[in-house]
Image (tube, rainbow, N blue to C red):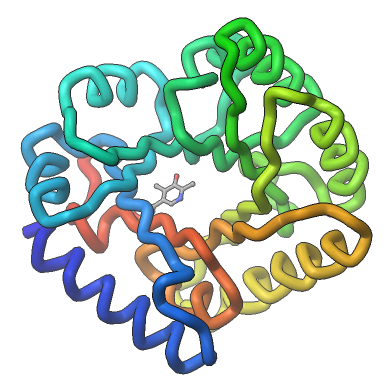
Length: 226
Ligand SMILES: *Cc1c(COP(=O)(O)O)cnc(C)c1O
């Protein structure tokens, strides 16, 4: 049941934060509800969960229209095509997956039209996997610089998806690298308080390395059926 799973995951997040000398209140749980039906999502809402992550725009729009509760936040965590930007700006509280100047400019255009400021993270690619989204480490600072000049976007931090490893400890170096990258960029003047990293199999390592947003799906809702 989502409610029991959420309670256990919150405890594990708090324990991981304490182990690393962090305040558990500085880590938010994003319940990744892609492919999950509205009945299960409602159970999570009833259990007090307020932040949900989706990776497909159309699927998310249907759920957003259907599920209403005070304080609900929907986050876009998946790869985003530019032609979907108009549906995303202003609909999602936070977009985790901005990875190109073109996408940032498209989001800017629609945020400006709607008269809103869109909060975003920049997704960083730390591995060589061709199928993954994210801007390469070498191009990151230039992209952040460009985004800083876009008045209707508010850059809040970085996100990454490491390769899948059965052993969560194998993902830890990626989490550490993202945090170190963030720290260096902050020294260079960027404000990047948020680090979105860690999923069902490795969120505790991510919290120990500094995650402020963990994106947990199957550990809450069960294995996904596509
Ligand atoms: C699906 C997904 C998750 C959640 O994965 P689980 O292993 O089910 O927790 C997290 N982040 C992104 C970007 C995803 O697409």
